[in-house]
Amino acid sequence: MKRILILALLWAGSILNVHSQELYVFTEPASNMPTKSIGARLTNEGMFNNPGFVSRTIPEVMIGFNKNLMMHAQAFLSDMDGQYRLEGGSLYGKYRFLSLDNVQSHFRAAAFGRISTSKRPTFTRDINLEGDNSGIQGGLIFTQLLHKLALSATLGYAHAFNDSEKQRAGMPEPNNMLSYSLSSGYLVLPVVYKDYRQPNFNVYFELLGKTDPGSGQSYLDLAPAIQMILNSTTRIDLGYRFQAAGNIANRYTKNMYLIRAEFNFFNVLK
Image (cartoon, rainbow, N blue to C red; front, side):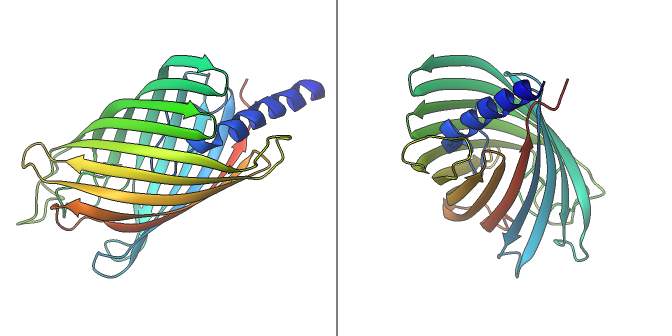
């Protein structure tokens, strides 16, 4: 039994090391976490244009049921409406339906869905299902690994639930939102992979955009980030996103830092 657990850790560790440049900071890849594993995340987001400074904390649990299916459960807490409080939660599921593998490269395609709830009042046309709005979302992810470089594209469509009790007079009423992203990740260290315990250092650059099909308003954010992976089980992310172009007013994520710690436990589900 001990030998099986060691082999499982080695296998899962090698996946995190070799494919770590797919662990994007602001988006999800088409690849999934190892089968029968559990991950725990704690994310803090700070926003500087509210006006002033506000922050959000997101505790999260991730479960890898098999090589094709995984789920996330999130809770959202922030001080955006004054006192720090629980805002709501979200369930996210991802199903990988295509895998094309070659030596030092692969292509993945996955479908995802999300349902979220939030008790925050509505202030902006932007639909953000990670704390600000209640709604549903679905979409597709395509990820290509080319040795140390990983590229990924996401296309999603979100619908916000209407709630007259949360609607503020004179504020926009968000309905539907098209989202899209293009992400790149590069494995800087180790130069040569020898052992799953080697620290990994990755750099990322992501383009994050949304368009409101009803009004035609849109925005595009640039999001550089760095990442450390320790002992193939612990991940630390640090990133910042800022608007390059757009005309959607009062966005909460317009100028936002993100810091995250993630811990993975392999082969724990039976």
